[in-house]
Image (cartoon, rainbow, N blue to C red; front, side, top):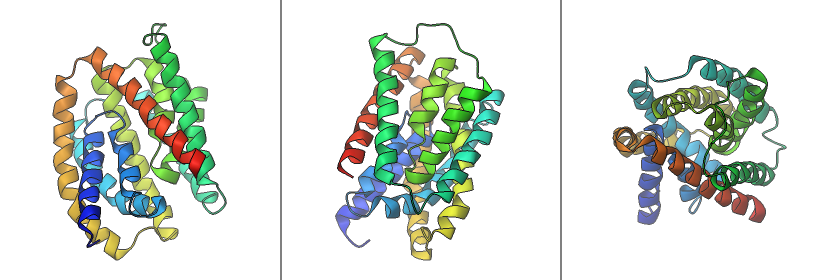
Length: 247
């Protein structure tokens, strides 16, 4: 932690977490790969979890009135199952395979949207079967590598929620999941006193970045916002495919 390059990377990673919690599409998912340039992905995930949780507090306040109740209830139930599955299989799951599969799912979905030039079909309703399936995957991949965004978006983008509700529902759902992950992460030894002290320092740039993210979301036109979400989903998914393939 005394390496200046690592400190710079840690601040950038924490800022990405904050921007993501402020509503910028999948930016937070860049945080673990950035830190993984210096430490193992598992150590990076453990170090950043407290930063996620502190940033969640500010994100919850910013979007406390903007969410879809039914979508949120379905996600909370499904993601709880996913986190439990991740904990139960933590010592036997091949993280590279999970990363590769998540990347393929996200890339396929994003390419489908882009080739169709956006979601042109009728608005879909948030039904339980699809929500339970994708939400469980989102909870599982969030537990494994903080990569729950692509499965979540595969289910929620076709619902065509408004920009604020889309962001707010995601922020609240993943705030719940991050708090839930504290127990298994601690049980698996991924949280230490030194990590918590360092995470407290990183929470400063992360928290400030939440408000920057909220501001940017508010000024970006809705059509452009969802186009950025789709392209960002594709970019992150391709990175996950690469990581999984070489892992």
